[in-house]
Each structure stands twice: as C-alpha cells, then as structure tokens.
Length: 171
Image (cartoon, rainbow, N blue to C red; front, side, top):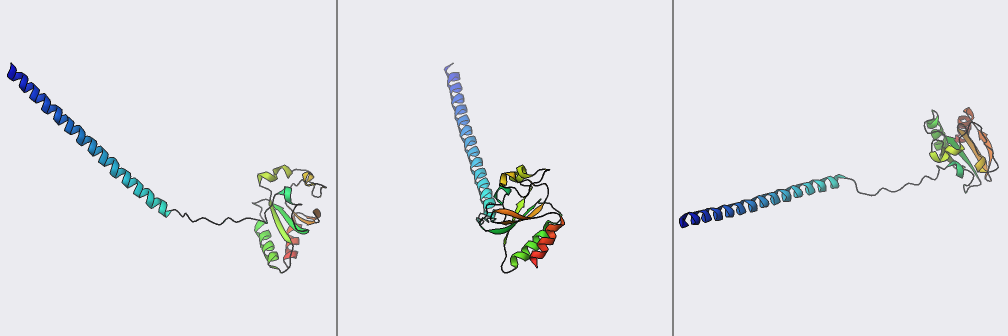
C-alpha cells in the first residue's frame, strides 16, 4: 500500500508542475501577443497621424460680410450694403461687379449680408420696411442694395436695379 501512495503522490506532483508550466507559458504567449499587437497599432496610428496636416491655418476674418443688425453701425460715413440670398441666380454677376468696383482706385466700401443666415431671419418679412428710423424696424422680403450715408439708409435698389447700379459703380 505504501508503494501505491508514493506513486500517486509522484504522479500528482508532476501533474501539478506540468500544469503550472503550461499556465505560465500560456500567460507569456498572451502577453507577447498583446505586446506585439499594441506595438503594431501604435505604429499604424503614428503613420496615420503623420499623414494628417497639423499645420495651423491662418484664420481669415471677413470684414465685408455683416449681419442685418449691423448695417447701420459700420465705421465709414458712406458705404453700400448688398442683401442677398446665397443661392441667388445673379450672385456671381454681383460678385463680379463688386470685385471690379473694389479694384477701382477710390471707392466706397461694399458690405454683403446673407439673408439665409439664421441671425437675419427675424428681419425677413412679407411687409418691407427698408428705410426705418431704427434697425429694429428694418424688414426685407427679397434682395436689395442699399446706400448708407451717416448711418441712415439713403438709397434702395431692388430687382434689376441692383445689377444696373453695381454695373454703373464698376465702370
């Protein structure tokens, strides 16, 4: 009987040792897999980050685009304001005339207002009031070209008059 107990003890000790070695090997293999996987992912991410343009772009401030609430508050004593929708059929023509006008030696400033801008929606109405005492009373239905003198709207051009006036200014 004692010989059987010794064999059983020997077998169980070797089985436990083998199991321990197997567990350690499995843990080392898993650790190696995670190590190399992490290295590969970080290398991939570094390559991807290097391709992304990280140079900061210079911010461009648009001084010629304003909101309706500011059309009477510009620093110049006399200037023009074009109020128009972004997708207007004649927008390219207007831009062309404005660019030509700005290339003329001495000229008044021309500001543009995008009527599609959500900040301008409170001024859009069926009933127009293009020459109000205060800007809070300003209402517009469709595009317009305004001449502002001494912080008051002095001339209003609408429809085809806008292109005609811009063309005249551009000459």
